[in-house]
Image (cartoon, rainbow, N blue to C red; front, side, top):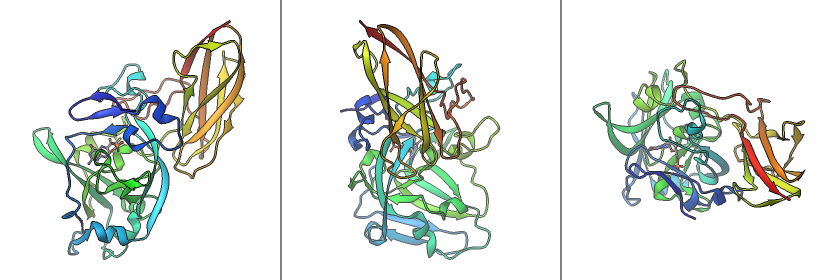
Amino acid sequence: VPLDVVTDRPRNAETPWVGLLPSQTPSESFFVRNHFDEPSLDPGTYHLRVVGEVAKAKLLTLAQLHKLPAQRISSVLECAGNGRTRMVPTAPGVPWGERAVGCATWEGPALSDVLHDVVPEEGVLEAVFRGADLGIHAGIVAHYERSLPWTMATSPGPLLALRMNGEPLPRSHGAPVRLLVPGWYGMASVKWLTDIRLTSKPFTGYFQKDQYVWDDASPVRELRPKAMLLRPSAGEPLRAGPLLLEGKAWGHRGVQEVQAQVDGTAWQACSLGRDEGPWAWRSWSLSVDLSAGEHTVRVRARDAQGEWQPLEPVTNRGGYGYNTAPMIRLRVMP
Ligand code: MTE
């Protein structure tokens, strides 16, 4: 099923509804978020350059990356701007609906293993990741670049993904190598990765300091808890009687609980599907009985830290991290 295109150039497109139903979003249905045109890297000549401030650069071929022990994780990737158009007032930026999200299996060496034998340098603060794509921003030519705090870069979790859903990484998702930072919003997961630079100074690139920051200038990072209703789908004809509500929920390190509320009555606990690891999303469902007429359904998730998805409107200047519990209207026929 093709993506729902939001902008043509650069290409930005949402996952179609049906792509959100399986536990793994098929790669060809997985949302795409690009700031520039997609580069095309030749796997035969590809090198990843890892360079410190004092150490010599280390070059890794694709074959060398493939030889390192691989990790395989199932992880949600959600754009920080997902849901932006639901914000009141809406914020400038790509006008995402609610489907700039997907969950896939990602496979490749742990970032910490790749950095492991880089000479530990005095005072390393961050690792800066450069993508091969570039364009003009504020009058200067710049690559897509983002940094991770050194402690995060060397912690378990982030990996250099070579495969997605059991196949080589597709071009749109960063072939041949992308950084994947599970549990953080998608901007951290740099595609078409060519360089890793260690630095003792905070990185202040455009996509780090001007974009993807909260109103107090602190960086956007961890996924906020969010539940989505997928079935019944919008406009599906419904008959009075028993009905199964179904959807997905995710958060920084998974969800603990999902609840649904019908017509403003008491919140009810939903059943959770299989736990596919701390970074994956979780299916949820609830059987309800609806009479003929108009009904409202609200769903909310609670993450592993115990934080509930808010019921109040979420707003900020960048239009990031929108996760107000959705209010869905259902029309039931007799
Ligand atoms: N990496 C590069 N090189 N260029 C980009 O434009 N976009 C980022 C991130 N990595 C981006 C990038 C953003 S904002 C998101 S949400 C994710 O990639 C989207 O990943 P996807 O296109 O594989 O879904």
